[in-house]
Image 1 (cartoon, rainbow, N blue to C red):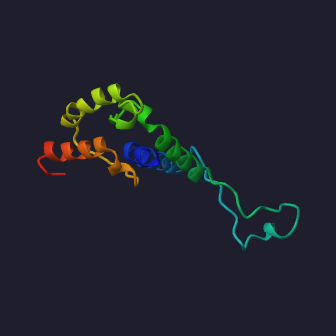
Image 2: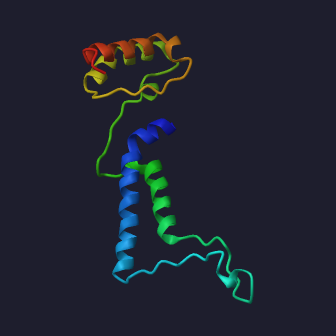
Image 3: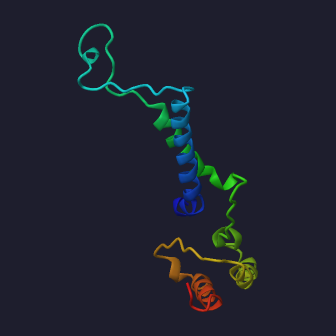
Length: 147
């Protein structure tokens, strides 16, 4: 699940994070927004007087891009721009009904012919399922070994 999420949304998450971070800096330069300056160890208010300041103060210009990065990474496939499609065989091929499973396996070639790439979310049991071996071999054959 995490591998597929990363594959589909990582570039979008980086772009959105970068744009938000740069926008906040532009707002600061334009005078619309002023970054809160974090305290340092040399700041006497940390240790003395009533104006004690904590060492950690969340920075809005870092927190907003970080939150947006995780949101786009998690939900980026729902964004209309740069939509990426994928065929997830485990969800599209019936796993328990053998008759339905055979119908799905027979249609693998049609899905693979329309594919530009194939990502295998590998686990030790992957090659114990014959149809997974068939799927991988069929993709290599369709791609003329150029994969």
